[in-house]
Length: 336
Image (cartoon, rainbow, N blue to C red; front, side):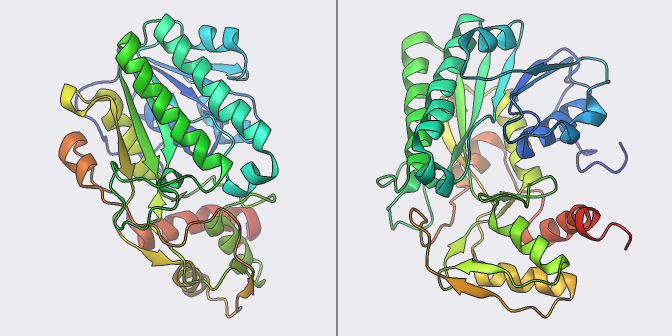
């Protein structure tokens, strides 16, 4: 495991007696959580995924390790959720159908997984006595709010079905905390990227698409004028936030949501320029119409996570892109 991003611990104390369930654990962020927990010797690492978007290849090295359990199952089935939550201390809920464009094309599927599946998991966690429920929310919750930087208490109206599903998640978690006493922390991810993020398919995110185009010496596509801006977050930062949220002992920090980001803003055009320099490509981008549901600018205020969780980004954009490039090279130019 010496090659792992996660040889450094993001937590204090031992994980030896702590039992975790990672939903969506064969996916991009979920598999990184699995890796961290395995590297640092968690007592139980139970993984559930329906392999709709996740891949067993992402977690194959960990499945034979002691204390690791695999469930191929769907969170839309309540009985499966109940089984998965049995004997678990912490749920790290990553399972979802991501992507704003996907939710616009398939709103019913997005709702079924992201809302009905989420409610199943909340209910199962409550019924099985889970200590804390940590879940992936999204910066898309900020919707049409023009306020920058984005602060947790200032949100607008959702601009897509996906954004609405994540807002509903936050509201359901709050209700379960007040009604049933279930502890939760929601993490509003801002444009997470890194190794294992799938560059294929119609709903691939911008950095994987740019990596693929650069390595294959193709023209990337930019939707809009390229001046839309985002707070890009390397995946190790999301892993760190999950561990801090699960293990935080300050009750004042529980039952609320936090931005998970770097607090830095880059345009999409700047991202392509960074990747072009890293790969040495001279390809120029092609521009198309803006996509419906996309926000124009996004920048996170991460002061709440800093103060209450002790969160500090591990890797910023430039280093994260360099760390990601090796993985994408292995896909597209493996003999280099």
